[in-house]
Image 1 (tube, one colour):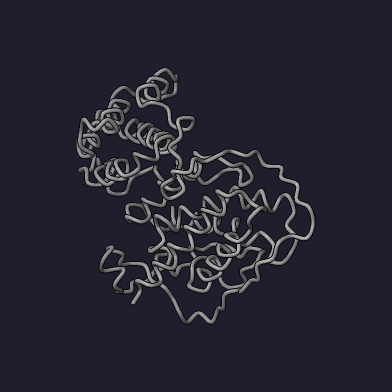
Image 2 (image 1 turned 45 degrees about the vertical axis):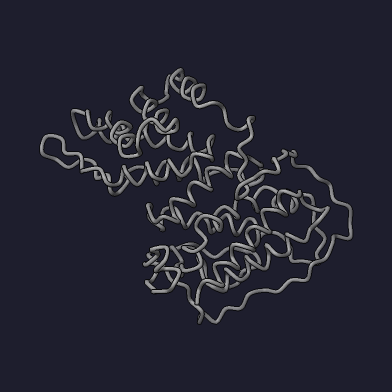
Length: 330
C-alpha cells in the first residue's frame, strides 16, 4: 500500500509528493505527566559512551570506524567478502577519488559480466552486502553512499542473451538483504552500528530512493519498541524498560532526523498488524500516532538520572526535528 499524495509546502521544497498526513482519523494522542520512578532502578545494559561532538546522534568514534584501507583489506580477506571490483569502488568513492556515478558502474561490473540470468541475480548480493557493511562503519560517508544508491538506480537495465535480468531502477535484492540483516535484530542490545545503519536507511527513505512498503514500514516497529512498549509516564520503570529506552530511542530518532518529513506526511498501514501497547488506533502511520511518539519523546527527554544522557539527547533532537517539521507545514 502506498501513501496518498498531498501537496504541501514541505512536499514542494523536499520533493515529497506521494506521502500525506491525515488530520481527520478520529485518533487522539496521549498526554503524559513527567514523573520520576519511585523505586530503585537496576541498570543492566552495558554502557557505551558516545562522544559529545555528535551530529544527529551518530558517533564517528575511532572505536566504531576503522580506516577505509583496513576496512577494505579485511573485507577482501574474507572468503565470502566482496570482489575486488566491488571493494575498489567503495574504497575509491569514500576516498573521494571517483564520482558516485563511476562507483555505481564499477561496483555492479561483476553483475554486468554475468553470462546468464542466474549468475547475474546471484551476484547482486555482493554490492548490497558491502553497502550495508560500509554504512554501518562509516556514518560520516552516508551522503556519498546515498548518492551511490541513486546512481545505481539510474543504470540501464542489464540484458543477458536478449533477456532483461536486472532492472537497476528497482534496486533488486536490496530489500531482501535489508530485511534479513538490518531489520531482524535484537531490540535489547545497544549498538552504534545499528544506529548508523538505521540512519542510512532513513536517508534512503527520506530521498525516496527505496519503496516505502519495504523500508519505511520497518520504522513502525522501532517507534513501537521505543515509545509504545514502555510504561506510561508516572509508572515506575523497571530495568527492562530502561534498557529498551536506552537501546531504541536513539534508533527511532534516526528515522525522524533523516526521514521525518516523509513519515509526517505518510498515512499508510502497510498491512501491519495491531500491536499491544499505548497506541490504540489503526496500525501504520498517522498524525495521531506521530503526536503520541512526540509526546513520548518529550517524556523521555525529562528522565534525567534514569536513562543515559545520550538517550535524553536523542529524544530532545527528535522532538526539535518534529516541531520543525510541524512548523513548516503551513
